[in-house]
Image (cartoon, rainbow, N blue to C red; front, side, top):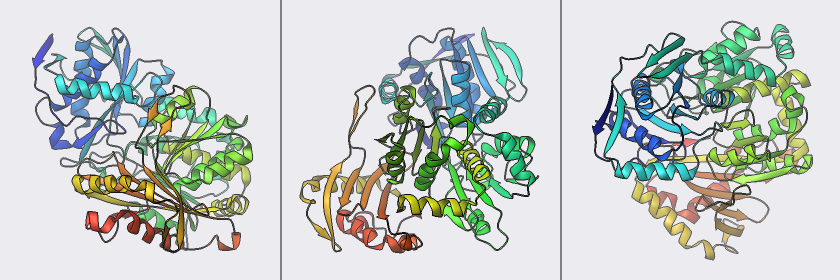
Length: 542
């Protein structure tokens, strides 16, 4: 029943910040998915007879690759696989299942917030036994295996019925199809005051949650409407679709503009939220106010004690380097540590496992805590709801009070998507070459205080991660950060992060892009964005 199939290496299977992401037709090439899955197994040790979790976000090609992964897990000696019903497991839910049942690890099939469909994106990543993304050591080892692979193992088994919960045997391995929502919903109930949230909705509180036809739909429907009593219709686009309904499942102000427009309208609900393709990102919009992801991290940390799961306080806060410094001021006031890490949730894993941090966040709409080892979109929404219920104030009031207390970090990210890779690389190489000459220079009337290529020294394991983004810091606390993203599937995405701190509360109501205009122009002057990319403006502004 076990076959060893000859194969040849593909040269383009280097994992990015969250696994391997390519267009569906690339994954549909002969043995392409099998090669990568086998390379993951070949890079691991000690899993014989152990349990593997398998699930995905329901995007196109998800079900087919799940069948391949089940058959290959059996052939390679796993004793059991746990698969989300219908092939569905949100990324944070998969992390929780790995942790709750102490499995060896898990394979998550997702390209996160990227579009889905026959010609769109697909992804495979491995999560370790702590529930978090594979560390760099393991992804590097996997890549080396992909370059030398000559065969893969697969069991000749009939397709598994993944739509019916229960347990079956396949090639001597146990296959358990699990309810994808139940364990996660139970975890959320242990963290948040569900009674207070039921009272909130019973009082007439109105909310809109847009699942964007992605994986959080079943989770939000069950928790918000079924368990908390939110009115039917609170959750929209809650049925996961292979192509996300033809839309881009990224919860930002471009792809969720309809939600933003509704929340800014005359009959806006009290609170609006959305999540992305695999459920690990979030969008928070109060009635009449958008909460930036960077501000959201800071505000959740400042108020976390109001939720039962965090009433004992926080051990520390961690944020990715490009995320604004808003959380730093909260950490300082609370008297706890603040950790600045590279982009990528795996860098938070060591801090969480060592109990050095409790809440973590990224400017790219990812926020989470020590309850799992992934960012968690619905968790962030529920914590916001718990804070609103406990404080009895509107989202807009909470934001205004936070800014008055800590100051406001005007912040924006400009994405230049699908830039020709050689052009993007040339821009970054030239910028690195002149870092030493930047301090002391004046740009648009602002003086550069320092400039560097960010390197992270992990305080837990001592590892060093270099070239994680170029920082240009100005006198007065403003900064611009340049970074090439590893989440796309074609070309390169140049991300430019612009930040200005404002302590004067009389200047907390400026338009963000206007407040940052000089810094935006300075970023182009410093890096030559237009001349290198040929782009007159970003693809997306958030």
